[in-house]
Image 1 (cartoon, rainbow, N blue to C red):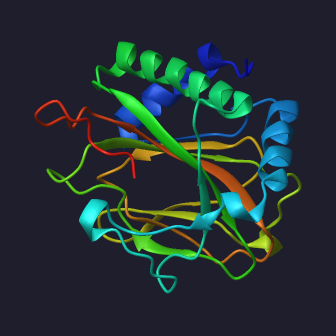
Image 2 (cartoon, rainbow, N blue to C red):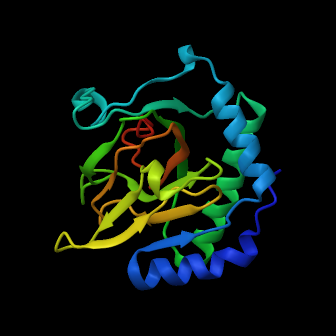
Image 3 (cartoon, helix red, strand yellow):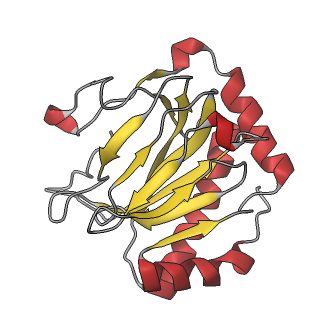
Length: 212
């Protein structure tokens, strides 16, 4: 089980989400835990990564001009992946208790940005058209510097830059999925993260909304 101090960070996270709609937690994971995930991501064979797409279900397409990262969806079948998902389940329960968000489940994937990869400005969800509520990104690379690029840019409602976040190891970013346009700048070094979404239940006639 990951040992990051949810009790230490949850109050700050909830206050920031309530006040500004996003939160940045620099040391969400212990270094050893982040390194374990980083090494695991590096060890995955190329056959387990695929080009990320944009859109969902019938509108899902691959467009490398917009987005050129590769992803690996996490599942409970792999022990380390299951540990991360359980950790996020604890966070989901804590967020619901404090903010009454009605978060139902969590989906996530590892993301790999190879040198030259980026993800142009986008929203993770549109109001009234999706069930993604909170987006999360946890960075895994050690020794990341400004020269490596790959920053996460969060924009305000006037397209002003609110945050320029260097993807330093163990940093967690959480933000409202249907509010903040954001982008990933071009990476100059292979960049790993875990990207996920806490969701509402979008079930229709007994069918849970698909995760990808």
